Length: 216
Image 1 (cartoon, rainbow, N blue to C red):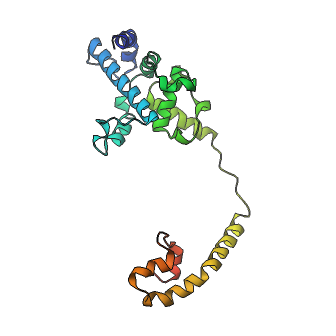
Image 2 (tube, one colour):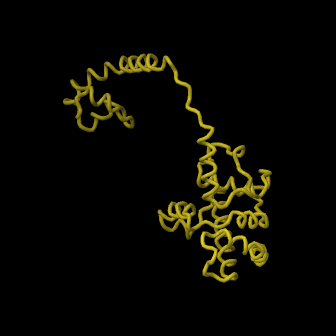
Image 3 (cartoon, rainbow, N blue to C red):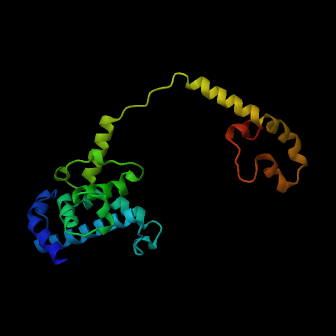
């Protein structure tokens, strides 16, 4: 921890200058302590999320994790990104040794995994330079802006409508006996057997089928 304090102390003037109000009513010692505590907490939480570890204090209430994800992107809660980079560079994270990421890239990927839905896709190619990122909220903004600039709508299928009509017609033909017999048999079936005889124990009828059966 003393090593973290020394690292952040060197960058304290830069961190103070990045604040919206440069005359922050906080001593250098207090500002350094806040940056170390907040920075270590953020990195620890990002690592816990990526590795599937649930901190007991955070998950003590069902709304704790959601509230934290909201708090991390509030403008007033942002700390300089270079502080987080310096902290993660000085931290041994053996869980990610096999990934081969540089510390700054690993930090950005942990943020995106937690806050930008990178769980199902790799966003490595679009990562900005760590030196160009001001804070976590700025990273998310940069990724969204880049995605919007390169997004293209999928090509329209000219024959999609006829195909859908044919699929709907085939589906109706398969269910036609059911649709015709259910209104006749339903009143005479035992109550516990009505649903199972109509749609099985788990399948829900579609809204279209319900409408055809005059269910309002």
